[in-house]
Image (cartoon, rainbow, N blue to C red; front, side, top):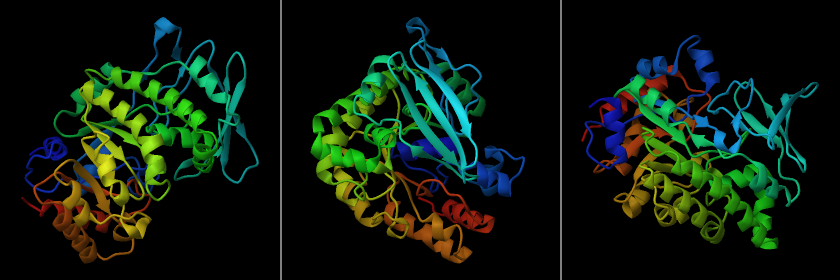
Length: 384
């Protein structure tokens, strides 16, 4: 099997020649440190991993007066931002901070919204939330231009890679900084603690907010018809059982994410629902969202709660599993023999009958090359 054939077969819960093995995101800092001047393709080839190409390409609805932001160069995993006469961006670097800091302003006819982001060599994070007053969500509903999928760009990428690489992307996030899932995107914009409290103090506002984000994501999902993605990500860790209760999940996550996934599936896309955190109390609920696959099956040593064997027993005949591997230990401090034994454990507990892609539980920032070699080589020896 070619790498793409192997990964796609696992996603469709069909037999494969050996256990598919890959990564989630490949962080730029890791590539720069260990493979300076090399590409993602070089990394995958070095270790014999099944390659993934992430691409996010948006296009503006020019009939609605939208266009690309002038002069923007998309960053890591970022699409070209969309602006309009009633929704434009201003950016200003802030000197003198411990971390590189940029203030972003979104200028609308009624109010300017501000978001502050910080970053280091490894990642970026929100240091000031965009939504500060509950009425701010009305500006998104009224003025934010609708991004659409650039199907032609996706298909050019698919043509360039052929059968060597899985083409992967995600449902649109809020521009500047966001996440695919409706609840997750809202938590980025307003704050996860604030969102949880609001589900008790002002649930009507929370539903309104989530509905605004859902409608934008549904329209994006509809525009993906004909895009030759192999897999689209939705969801996010703020919807995990280590963050919210099953009751909050049922009322404020499931209805909104289920709708987006249904539209993406109707547009011909496979969908993986991403839950980097606790999953065990939610397993059947997660299956009910309608995705083809679930990730990240994070083990307890990394802050999750995953029991792979129990998850396989409960839902293994319904969705593909992606993840399950503790990269914090087995990519950094373990011996090669221990890393190989962990691969075998994951295969033994979740590999029966196929439908399992071995992968780190989300991205990694550090990994010894000899342990990556052990990880990939042992997986290739796990045959069906």
